[in-house]
Length: 398
Image (cartoon, rainbow, N blue to C red):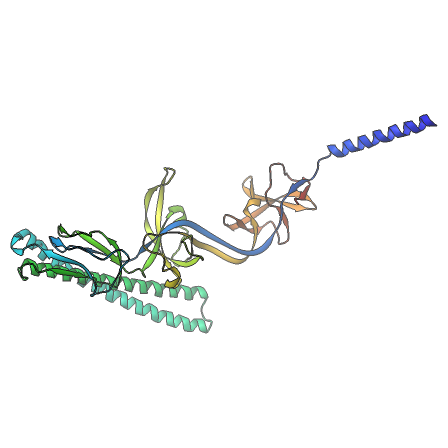
């Protein structure tokens, strides 16, 4: 009996060992991160660095050869049109001017008179277009109130009105600029013709309301005609210029919304694409690669109080929104991989990885739209490793 009992114990232990070995040699389920497919918002953007710049700027220069007195204004100081003295200029004795210099001054007056005429014609044209655009916008707003047009149509007309208003503002600046140049040229001509007494000074006053951007000459000095003295501009006319790869620029359209980030403030600013320039240029990247770039000009949509801390030449990051939908079926892009010529995921069915081909639509760096192949509520593996294959048993990672 004792021998028989010993045999049973030995056989039982052996069976347990064999069972343990069989269990240990069986493939164990692989741990993986599961994600449930759902619908939600999806936004696709083209991201790039940008730089702020004043749209219209004015360079104050010496009207003719002479001595410019010390300039007291500093960068950032406000200036008022026709009031603030920018610089005081003591021209050379007119008897010392040769015939060639006098002829050049006279030519400059004639050119300034022509420039004023052209600027006024452009301003009148811009004013007509702006009035027409405002009238068109008012009509479309009445149609929108009656629900006779789409939101997209109203947005397009509103953009045309905004663009026309900006064009008119630039045209007004051009007229002010041209008139200022004419006044300076006429004063120079009067001085050259001996119309002033010895030692008479020429006072250069600001042609616009704005601020000093740069002071190019500070100390008193003898300067030649046309020497730049100061740059002024209206800081309210701030825009952003961002150079995009030409392959990205073809996807950007005028009127698309823009997110302005990393500018130093505590919130994202809103902008809108005003212009995509029609010519490109070559730029060398940080890696030494030649790239074809295209400038995209962006206007601020927020009120000035939101971005008034920004100035000329500040760095920002812009994200042009090329596609934005509020309710699409989507998956993390980390779950996607190529299966031959098509996209695929590993769907999870009864704890088994199933290779599933999908058709994707729009995508950004984090998520992709699912056009077909999956349904809301399906589970997929978020980060499929090389160990996962079709038919492999998987369990959710804790």
